[in-house]
Length: 148
Image 1 (cartoon, helix red, strand yellow):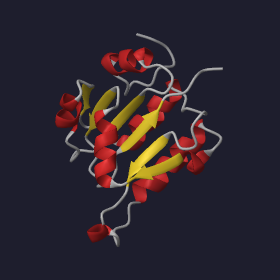
Image 2: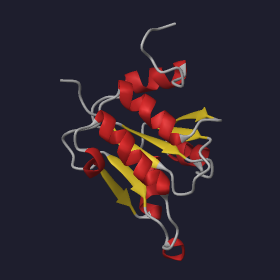
Image 3: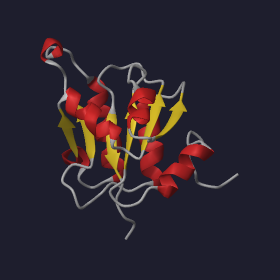
């Protein structure tokens, strides 16, 4: 066992986060995200975190991994489709609050991709982490920074 490591981070996930270098990205998919297919497209590492929500995973990951300060928005969300424009996505505000705990830019560090662009970007991630998150449009891509 290790001290000061959030228990939600599995040994496999810790290994991946450690292996990732500056500007590598990890996609955390919600329960509906086609994570296995996305990972298979370009041989990304595919991990599961069943039973865990993204806010908890996000907080734990950002405890050990800095966001990239060399890009404006190192945390990227999936935009809603026009047919869902009236849906409220409260988890996005939660993400901004979590990010603000770990990055002085707070919500300003968060951007978004159009849905199908998000899928293309996810295919290029170092790792796709499939969560048990039940909120829709809860997917997020994080770009790793450097420890200074």
